[in-house]
Amino acid sequence: MSGKAWDRAHGFFNKQFSYSSGLVNTGHCFKQKYGRFEAKILFNEPTEVTHTFWMVAEKQIPHIDVVKFDKKINFDHFYKNGDGNAHRAGQQTAAKRYAGKPYIFTLLWSANSLEWLINGVSVTKITEHVPQEPMYVAFSSGVYGNSEPEISEQSFLIEWVRCYQMAESV
Image (cartoon, rainbow, N blue to C red):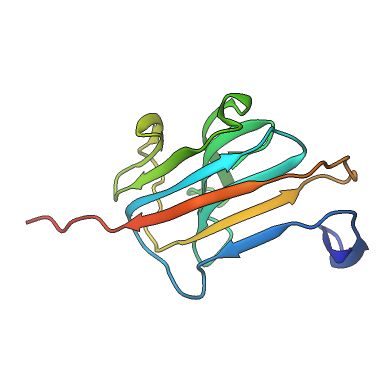
């Protein structure tokens, strides 16, 4: 299978792969600032393939990983502060315990905080460098790194996705 690979020095180039990956996003039709963003997802066993439910604005940063599943599960927020450099804040947990059955992964985003939940239970919360611009939702699978790993059949099954706006304060 022919596809594109990325090289920092040379940009995108054509490459042959023994697998395919995918990306779906709402960048062309849906963006939202603040709210509840959630999806019911079933991951299979962790491997070299990374599956991600993420959000991003017009530029690469700010970027939120609602859930990033590979050998670990990451709940991350990437941001720039006054120094202009990219920074990461978040939490990791073992991926294996969340493989093989569906879970509801949720991000609660307000003007003052980002909170990640699994099946309604809080995992981590951030109150600094909270994004203040609309973001779109994306789901992707991919292989990262330079090697061509042995890849068995992988799945990233999304039963549903829901996005809610916050109620207006009275």
